[in-house]
Amino acid sequence: MDRKHRVEISYQDPMERIKNFDEVCLGYTREEAILEAKRCLKCKNPKCVLMCPVSIDIPLFISHIENEDFDLAYKVLREYSSLPGVCGRVCPQEDQCESTCILGEKYEPIAIGKLERFAADYGLDNNIEDIEVKESNKKKVAVIGSGPAGISCAGELAKLGFSVKIFEALHRPGGVLVYGIPEFRLPKEDIVDVEIQKLLDLGVEIETNTVVGRTINIEDLFDEGYDAIFIGSGAGSPLFLNIPGENLNGVYSANEYLTRSNLMGAYKKNSQTPIKVGDHVVVVGGGNVAMDAARTARRFGSKVSVLYRRTKDELPAREEEIENAMEEGIEFIYLSRPLEIIGNEGGEVEKIKCIKMKLTDADESGRRTPRDLPDTEFYIDTDMVILALGTNPNPLIPSTTEGLSSDKKMRIIVNEEGKTSLKRVYAGGDNVTGSATVILAMEAGKNAAKEIYKSLMKEEV
Image (spheres, rainbow, N blue to C red):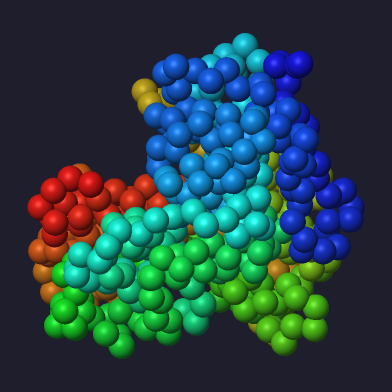
């Protein structure tokens, strides 16, 4: 067998996929997954496990795939992760588990993420019974937010015998999984909804349309008899450039644009959700959200350019997403930033004024800073601009909860155990760290669940 190279995985043809919102990566077939699993060295001291934020026993689930025990592979994943189908698609394995794969020191590392997706999909498609729930311990925990951190925390606590209820501000659970990540990367009905149903099957309740800090507050939850509270409300407040023209018609934050397309279903045929379709869309930013916005606009039929102030080498988005975007005909304009968005007499976007930049020499940390190049202004004709500049937590919960400490960006302050300044109140995920990855939010939720268990049950998990 060939240990040097990964088993290739199939993708939709780029010129076909820009006409639909179907999943781009088609995943491994049964035979392909077995072949890839056979490449694994089954290390005695697997570094990949140490690099996994939720500590999945990676060699074990891969060995089950190799032995064609796909149900056992799925059960191993579910023992450690509440969202294996999600993580197999959107987790940056190349920077975590796969980056320390021993095989990768000489050859291509094991495709851990693609194998996780295969095993997860097998388990979901075959409705494998996977989790045993401990007898009720009569303790109640409230979880605020049904994104990755909240789902992870709720799932772990439910398995340990807690009565758990999630309070979600939107009309549909899932958080960033349903409003932020496009269908072509993460199918909602086939993956997200099914994994949330697994959470409900554990006995977790979800109450939607409940805005904590408005319709209910932290004190109310304690009055209702909850023994502890976990805040996993994410970071959904978009950042802006504060340049002239940001209020023109045709300027979106990536959050609003993706929410309209994903959560509100604008991507569906015959959808009634209003969304602007630009002839030429300029996306400002270089992260995964920028790629999601750019690739979504491309599927609506727009010509798309991504404006980024550093070079291709510094793009923070996943390499796979960058490659997919390039294959789909998206233009990248590097070492440039916008100075002004210019509109016509009707208040519609007409062009964007930019300036060229250069990178300074690396500082002590190795980081190179972009600086404007004088007299290099240029214009791009565009009728739509999407700003994908990152997000901060919504200030609602910190500003309405007396005694809850937060920083200037309204990120909730916690200690190493995830405890906030309030007794029996924990927090984790993007509302603590700022915008980060799904798997890091899951890690925070899982760790908080352990601390809640230890605090309420007076013993280690």
